Image (tube, rainbow, N blue to C red; front, side):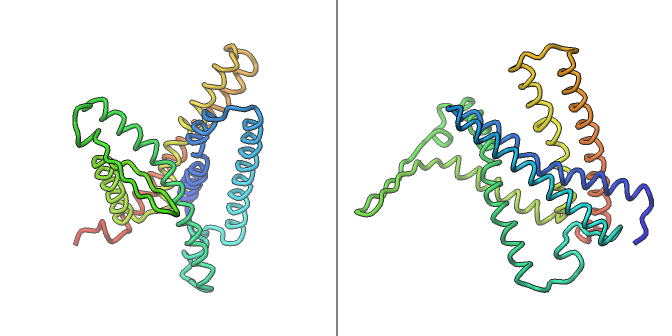
Length: 251
């Protein structure tokens, strides 16, 4: 596959968006750290974060370099299946199972923030609506176990509708790498770099135009430029995918 310099550049930018998506855990990290009370838990959390980020970075760098060294311009978005070879089938099944387990857990964690924000906003707007605020307890007690749950019709309805909508949207737009790159790119700089850095500067009371402040701002600006490049690459990738995919072709 012969690619022009411009096409190579767009692919690199798109790949940056894929990598940025891996660091979107910072939004959850802030929530976790907010619940940490003892200094011992904080030290363990910092160590776990350092190990996790280092491992993730090493993994992406190795995959990127090894993939390009082995396949050059033909390096696919999915190293396991995009070549058209589905053997050995057990390896592909294990990889897909790992992806499903990862996405199931991540989806539940990340969507809780959206669910909580919207439900809290609507509850404040309509505090007298039984459909929105009504809670119906369900209790099952036996000799071996006890199950207690609070059932809410609005919560069940809108969360189910959200999952259905997201699933249909994923089916209609089967551009996994490009969508992943776009989501990662738009959320990377504000949620992973800007807000945590501003919180750190405020907490540590770092004065403006000091060496430490200028160094942090240099990192901030550099990551912002990377995010812009990744957004541009992902949009270009989505446009190209829409043109090629049969779903969006007019008959």
